[in-house]
Image 1 (cartoon, rainbow, N blue to C red):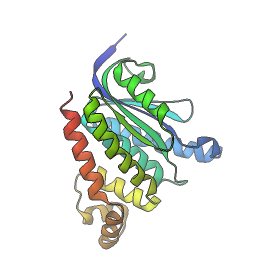
Image 2: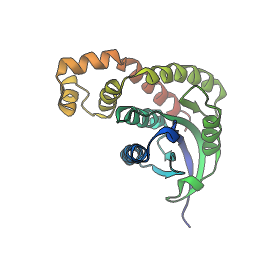
Image 3: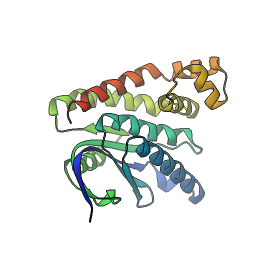
Length: 212
């Protein structure tokens, strides 16, 4: 048995209002979710499980990128048809799990992530770590970002996701990826307040990297 024990981020989530989706729509949403999880964990050498039909967990060893992963997953589901939201909680700390069996894992990060998800009511995004002082700042910032993402349109979510995932973040390149005009991409990104999201992710990355 290959038990992995390390400091990492655990992302726990579930599809919001999945019971209201038709069988075919839920299957499509799960396909989009799985595809985005595969892409994100490959970038940061992580692992994930999808279970119970509408829930998932991922372990991201590079904890500083955990909020970017969480937001990209959320944007991917908001960008699909039917546009769907997802509740996501990120917890940082020690983790221990059998290789390729994330859902059976344990440790501080699993506990924090699960408990924070259970406490989510009107919000869709949560963050918690072992630093109570930082958590106070992070929770307030995350609440604002969460509210903003909730308000994004399907097109804004699609464009913001492409921007966050692109190595070349020039608007001309994003326009090519999405087959849109550069002026249209710039207009959509400005409306989605992409600089604020980028600044939030940069701040969270710099602060959570210090905790490792």
